[in-house]
Amino acid sequence: MAENPSERFRTPLSRARGMGAARHGVSHFMTERVSGMALVPLSLWAVFAGLKLGAGDFEGAAVWLSSPVNAVLLALLLVTALIHLQGAVQVVIEDYIHKFTTKSALVVLNLFVCVLSGALGVFSILKVALTGAF
Amino acid sequence: MTDTSRGLPERPMSPHLQVWRWHITMACSILHRGCIMGLYVGAVILAGWALSLALGPDAYAVYAGLLGSVLGKLVMIGLTFALFFNIAYAIRQTFWDAGIGFAPKTADLTGAAAIAFAVVATIVTWVIAAATGAF
Image (cartoon, rainbow over all chains, first blue to last red):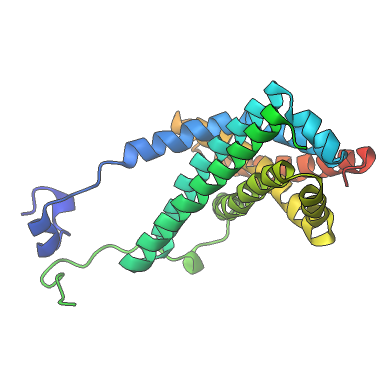
């Protein structure tokens, strides 16, 4: 009983279920670290792009996005940021919300917000890049 | 619900925020979490921007008008800070993952440097924005 320190605090119910950890910890950690590093150059480019777009109008933005380099980088920025933020916000939810139903609902909502933003964003980027915004 | 923890030793508790002495590494950690929540909204704003562009000139004018309003500009300045702070924080964490920079003095210094970098980079960005007409 006292052999493994982590076993001491397991409740009888937890012992009966025998599930242990979900074993997703390392995968989550690597996703957050690698996407975080990828976002360093992408974010710097985003500031540069934002300054350029902020000074222009609709036509300027449409012409800017018709460049394949800009379209690909913007899609990469959006998707990488959403992957990173989905994982990051899930941890925030799990840290502060302890009621099972509320926590599960928010985790799923977080996933849906990120996937929907990604789908709408990437579709819009492709639409403007491939067919023009007019 | 039935009490399933009967007979178990009392679990160790981590100290609550209120009993910690305020220090820079803690401020960075909290600021980082706050910035993440801000950037979450920022990513949705970015997707909305692409959508407004795809919807045409009228939708884009409305969206650009919202972003260019006083509240919109405050949000954009906040997001600029969050973005720069997260860049610095990601680099700091990568060194931590390699086991470098955990000495209290180093951790304090890199934490202060991350905040200073974010403040300076945000000011520089918005000075450039004002000069080029993006502000």
